[in-house]
Image: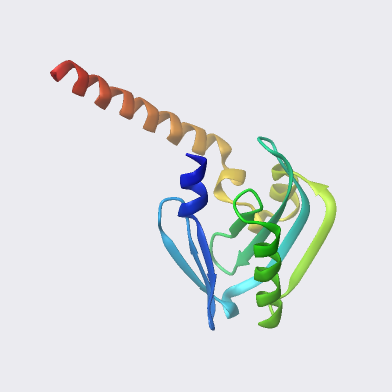
Length: 143
């Protein structure tokens, strides 16, 4: 599963913007002019893995793009930041430790949906699991 997560996410910097493909293979293109700023949290606390760097790309009027070193190496993050800096995108670096809750409180427009509404994500995941279990039960009983 982890290998699939790593392979399925992509981020490409082109001449006019950033193209991001998420785990569900949905592609989103953001032009450089639509990027509000980029916040680099050097010491982001990821509950499952510990402290990792995290890059948040703030999008005017849209959902931010969250990039964590869990899926991208430090070299790739440095390359991304250099490319964005070259396009005159504002880069802000924060060295202090930060958690999801702190990002949600201090930078609400940079918080992802999972950070703003963790209960919704848990509920949707639970419903998906129940539907999967029902379908699996029907398949097994029909054989």
